[in-house]
Length: 208
Ligand SMILES: O=C(O)CCC(=O)C(=O)O
Ligand SMILES: [Fe+2]
Image (tube, protein in one colour):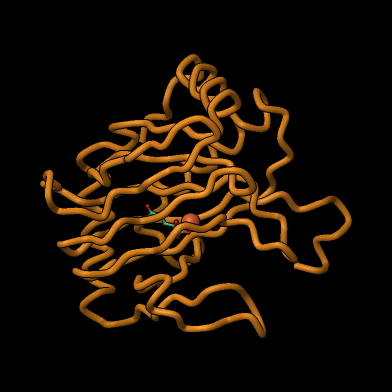
């Protein structure tokens, strides 16, 4: 893997601070895309995805009217096929900490599969009682996505709405506490690596 040049990150961090969201195309190479997609497909075949719920703990509900995706949580120690992905995320964390003065100290990611006909209604990623999700990240893996396939990400920004096509190698960063968003109904299988960059207050790590 070659890290993205730091100069690029300086511009990207500016965009994220000013607009609360940042879209980068070709964030990964074609080679990385094929490794990640193969790994994704292997797990789909093994059927080890679970229906995603809403909220945590007692709030957890299976609500297909709200979201229809299936997820598999990632573990960087065992999902070694995704080592390059985690390296790129680590670089993002380092750059955001350096240029955005954030104190990000961890991340959590899952694979997400939206089967045909599913969506995720408008929501905010930061849970009210668990506010350590600072930045939401979505890397799309949809080769040959075309107009009409659906599954666009719609962002509700302060002064505008943005519709983002979930095309392969595109990554989206957004402020988890600020940007309401939704996944429009998809007409084809839709694949992504989705997660959050976390703020862990020093001294509170024993609560994790
Ligand atoms: O896949 C996307 O485009 C967004 C997913 C999302 O909003 C979420 O998982 O919270
Ligand atoms: Fe979300």
